[in-house]
Amino acid sequence: MRLLQRYVLFDVIRAFLLTLAGVTVLFLGAGLAAEAVRRGLTPGQIVRIVPYVLPSTLPYTIPATLLFGVVLVFGRMAADSEITACKAAGIHVLRLVAPVVALALLCSGLTWWALNDVIPPAVARITQVVAEHLEETVYNILRRERAITSNRLPCSIYVRDVQGRTLIGATFQRIDQQSGELITAYAERATLEFDLANRRIIVRMFDADVQVGSSIVKVGDEHVFPIPLPDMALTASDSPRQMTLRELRDAIRKLRERLSAQAQQQKEPDPYTLRRYRRLRSELHMRAALAFGSVLFVLIGCPVAIIQQRGEFLGAFVSCFLPIVVTYYPLLLLGMNMSKEGITHPGIALWTANAVLGVAAVPLLRRVIRY
View 1: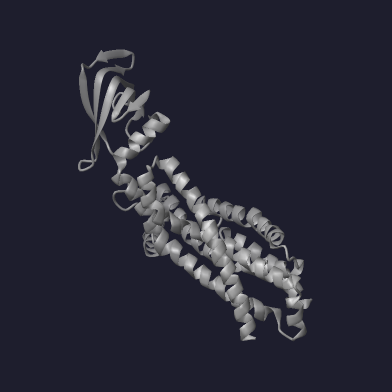
View 2: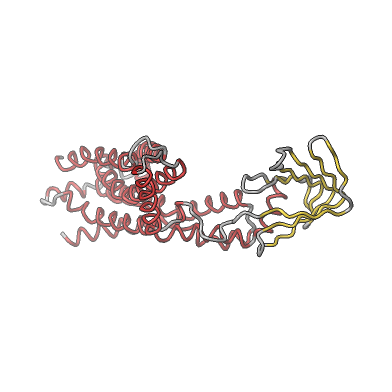
């Protein structure tokens, strides 16, 4: 019996690891492309962030590739009547499935560890790499999009062209905090000097005109003004995705105490504190639910592969994986949104998708055991 279990387990592991390597490469390429487009990364920066993007793919690639390995092995065994032979020999089907479930539990543990201790510092490191090359990143964005508009910057920048480190036909716009009027500065040429020590950008404009309301003022051949630079994650970020499990729990505890104190004083909950509390608590449940998905994928994949008895594994995998994709992940995202809005408790909202897969697995396993 142990020999048979090792045979099944090693076959699943081999298929799982080979598929995981291939799918991870595809996900890694897609993740790098998304980061490059969003942040305006150079090839050198892309190479530097590869080790930090890789862990972020694992919570999604591990369940899918484990499902593929399970469907491949058990589908082939069923098609070759090996499952029938095991039953005729008095071997219970669940004893064949047990080692694979143990493997799924191990994968769930690895996913949980990655979500809480590996991915948060990796995501923070990506932002830090971008911040360290901020000047190059800004110029790349201006070359590609001809504009930078962000609510994190006090002004918007538009250019006609970028030649080296010189902005051609540069326009700078901001709202005056005192008068509320739109201030527009136009320069034939402009340069940007990044003073990271003082967290500011020094703008040098040449042949510039400044328009305040309906008034236009000529400011001379050269005009210099600073733009305050926002904290580009040079320090630790408060994004839930960049928080480890300990940081997440500590933050939730502090916010809960703050909300409890406000309730005792019969005050309305601070909207920001309440929103932050819901978001962090949702993140905690999301990680747990996502990590446990590997076990449920296996509990669905094994009986489906045995019931269909297909030697052609690709069709069996698609028929098993497609229903999971169109139900599990949409329900997970819906639960995340409902939890963040405070509509439903995160323990219910974010575990509903897992519960649906668990309920679906019961009749499938019963059918395999019975027949």
